[in-house]
Length: 223
Image (tube, rainbow, N blue to C red; front, side, top):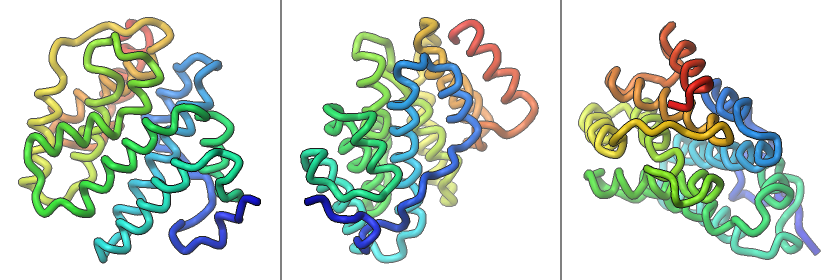
């Protein structure tokens, strides 16, 4: 019998999260058939980010992230119930849990790493964006969402040296601007907003008047 997630002290809360504006825009420009899955990926990402942000003792942060890694490794019918994000994973992401576990691994870097370097930052971006890459397929340049993954992280960190390293890593991943197909316009929106944020020194993705214009252009033209 599945236990209740609400009884586990490894879970900070069981409520759904309100997604940031840039993620809501990306979802709005994603085909209905995969919108639920993308929403769930983003919701899990935001939950993991909140765990990391609230961690003051690394061992406790690792325990909370390990809980997610463990339940995502279990068959859906054996998982706890009652957590909005975990329930959505079962409903929308069945069979794609391996990519979600990569996302957990990504966020653990900020709990255990003594210092970021270029390789760690790049691997973080690839692991964090693994569910998006799996969603759009591996044959697309730059995968899916790697630039967003690192640009968003750069906007969150307070250490200037780490932020600079993340910005450099993100710009290095950006490469050539590639137009996305209509089915991938949501990812194109994130790509465009992320690149703009990196060029502005790691600012929040939706900061400033130009953000909305950037999002609309990417939604219309795919780049």
